Image (cartoon, rainbow, N blue to C red):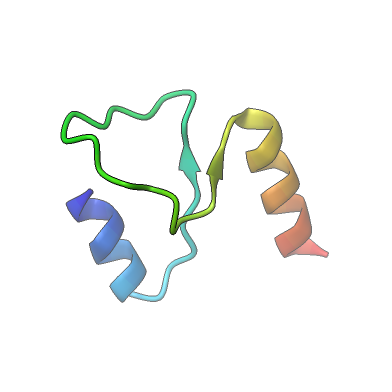
Length: 49
């Protein structure tokens, strides 16, 4: 999660790929865009249009 916070503070857009997510501390990720590969594709496609 620390990497996510650093990226966000640098102004990077964040999407958590939950198909590959390891969340050992069971942190709440609901505040970030997240989902599987299909949702990631839709998210990136939306950003590019």
